[in-house]
Picture (cartoon, rainbow, N blue to C red):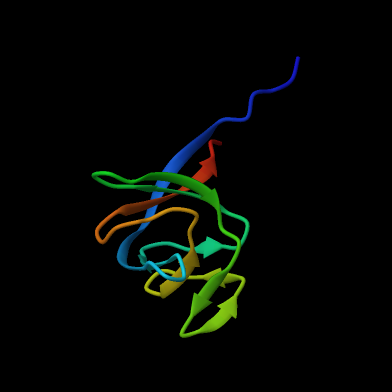
Length: 92
């Protein structure tokens, strides 16, 4: 029998701005985030889950961002200021 993979969500930041024309959310991080991580953005009218394809810090592409960084992430749907950002993490 296959072992079920369980994940939980950990809050890693908050959306501070959204650029509609380029579909980029600006997120202030309270924890680390890497390209390939799955994020869940939740807000009053937002409920979006997606894999992080790219991260930019100061208009430079990076593979990983750390606590305190303000990053740009390409998002597949509209996100709003003050939406909370969660990262899926494996339960140990």
